[in-house]
Amino acid sequence: MREVSRITDCWQPMNIIESTYDGKWVFMVDCSENDNGTLLGGHVVVSGESRANVFRKIKEVNDGTSLTFFGYVGKIPEEAAYL
Image (tube, rainbow, N blue to C red):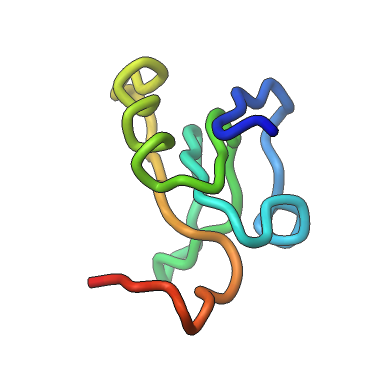
């Protein structure tokens, strides 16, 4: 099982990201948003089931030159503890 994977696909709209990465944490670069601030899509560069592992990988892949997103995709499970 891969805990964290590096994704090399191109920019994707949120509906594709939501269906592909449902139940995972993702870090995206080159994100786009509409005038209301709603995320439209981006380039997923890291994904995984562990928030901590994905967060650690962000330092390696984020060059700080574009709009980014780090978050959980899908419905957060009821049994999950979160702040």
